[in-house]
Structure formats: C-alpha cells, structure tokens
Image (cartoon, rainbow, N blue to C red; front, side, top):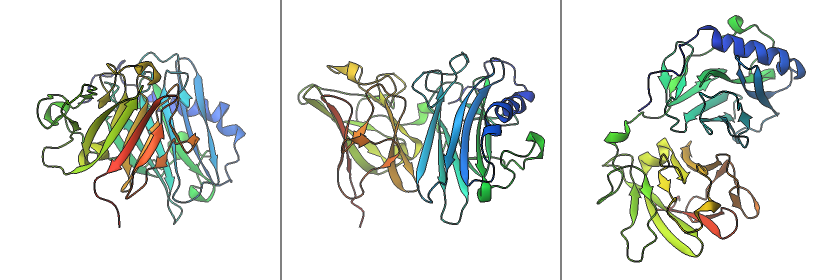
Length: 318
C-alpha cells in the first residue's frame, strides 16, 4: 500500500515549476511540429532535468523510461533524496489511430506517485499528456506534432491535461497471497535446495496460473510460478526484499542488480523491462528492454554471464 505521507508538504507549484524548467532547458531544443513523444523529469529544487524525444514512433511499439536517483535510470535525478534509486517506470505507446497512451507504475518505492491534486497512486494511465509528482520532482510525458498540437508550445496552464485514471488494482500487500503453501509474503525467495517446494507469486487467491519463471544462476536453477493478477500488477525481479522474485540468497547473486527487471502484462502481452540493471537483460544477443515475450512457447533471457531467466507460459496462445 502506498504511503499517503509525501516526503515534503505538497506544493501546487511543483509541477508547474518542473514544466517551466523543461520548457527552458529541453523543450526549446525540440521541434514541436515533429510527430513524437517527449518523456522528461525535472527537480525544481536543484533544477536538474533529464529527458528526450522519441521521434516518429511506430504504432504499436512500446517505449519506457525509468525515473530515480540511480545513474543507470534513463531519467536520473540524483539530487532528489525523496526518490528511490529506481522509483517508477513510464511506458509509452502510440495506437494505430494515432493516440498516445502513457502508463506509469511505481516500483514499490514506498512513497508512490502523486497527481496534480496531490492524490497518491501506484499506477496510472492517461490518453494524452501526463504529469506526475515523483519524490520532489515532476515527471511529464507529452505528445508532439499531429499526436498533440499543443505539445511543448503551450504554457503549462493552457494545456488540457487529462485526469489520469488508475491503471492497475492497488491491492494492499497484506491481502496478496504469496505462496501456495507456506510463504506468507508475496516476495518469493528463490529456493535453490534440492527437492524444495516450487515457489509461487500470486496476486489473488483465485487467479489462475499464467506461467512460470525458471531462473538459473551459476548452474543452479529455481522455478517460480506466477498467476495472471501478479503479471498484470507487475513482477519485480532482483535482490531487494521489495522484489517479488528475490534471489539475494542465491549463489553468485552479485550478477543480479537489486532491482533488475520488471515483468508486466501490457495489452495482453507479457513484456520485460530492464530497471537500470548493471548486467542488463538480453534476448538473442540484443537488449530485451521492452520486449514482448513469446506467446505459446518459452522465452529465455540472459542476465549477464552465467545467469538467465526463462518465461514459460502455461496456456499457449492459438
């Protein structure tokens, strides 16, 4: 459950101040007539900013941006101590009819995200421009060109900002079933002992199993089953306790970053997102960041040398 206590008192001017910084330092360098999507973040207190433009996005393709203090995040704001190292992920997609859809998901930071009215969220979706407070910084996703004529050229108060809607169910952690038999938290600690019971990450007691992950590190493997609800709310993989698949006790666990990857159902397809990991996540010798995993058969992903994770869907797509 997201804390409703913000790191500092909520300021109505924070989002506008962040927008003004980006308008001066970033937006002025971008052609607002070109079809694209701008994803950017700014810290009003330090005037740090980070972001860029996705030019001529192809319909159906998915892009993502990660905001946090970690230098490996694509929207790094290291001076904002209210941010987690890996705080939230923003996912952008352009539909076939030319609409820009933005989704944002808090990576269990503990403080979440806030809309323009100061309401806390774990996940939001918006059809059109999106503005959010994360930590003490402002996060924006703005279409340009034919996707949104007012993008980058209008003043902050003149933009028709749609009210973001909740994207995923905000099920309190204590209500989630985390293991079919004996584990009492959603986080499934990888068990690498011979004959150990298979771990299960469940988002709901009645949700059917969607598939399983087979994690191999240093020649030893562990199997973790996941249900449909868990995938739709996001399965975090890494060494931190907040991760659903936690491999901190595995041999050679140093190959895995504290928050290494996110597996998430997006438009009925399971995708993997690299959450600023050190060794990355690959598929067929290319980066797998944003990749939709195969439907109907297994997808094996590399996690650096001598480590991998394989997604095995339960019900093959026809």
